[in-house]
Length: 345
Image (cartoon, rainbow, N blue to C red; front, side):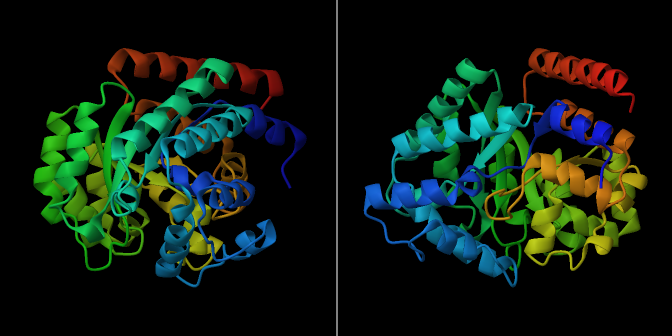
């Protein structure tokens, strides 16, 4: 159990989230509403049934359930609603800034208009910012299993959006789909001014991480936890300042890590690797960002200083223009300092 001051710190601490999939934030209630409105049949018919789906034997089963549910989302209006609801939820957890991914091939493969999807999402972000002050930006997370050729069309749409799309990533199942073939797409994304990240080192070992940092030139890695299996790789990550956006509960529930004591977050942090703490798909993993902070303290052995450092690292690693990033870093640092002095922690 956390002491009351520590619990208050977690609830009130200004936060930054960098690894979050919009599709993975939808509540069972909203899934069912969208499915009914859009005439989509889901593998469950009530909220309890939807929630019961969120039990996975492995990462592949998680992806199957994820893809079966996101079929309920079909229009820009749907995306605006999801983005707005997410903004309200994050603001209630004192999140000041978040980068949110969508998986574009989920929609292109269903003949949806990707520009409508993106613009709907950005409209929801803008509404949340007007109402509750949270800043939300979008990253496109291309499914590596579709191969690099189709990625060019997705990147072309991103380049046509004048504001709000800040990041480019590859996601999906690492098994059988190494990062190296995507190097030309990542070079073009960098030229377009997008921040670069990649899912790597989640279910495949250090080779996936080496490929992402050496070939793709990313500054952040989604998960990256298997880097702990390679001491030389941990040194490289530390020396290059590459950030791991770690999602502890996700790693447990997809089987990427077997038990809480085996999770390498603390070991990575103690090796000097920069880490942030995130939810990944909070609905699918029955968590919140506040809960991930609690679990990092209680289950993974991080200290309050470690947790505050992770928040500041997240602010410094955001894919924002320099002036906006500096403002965010100053705000986060000032608010954390004042809150810790108030609470005496």
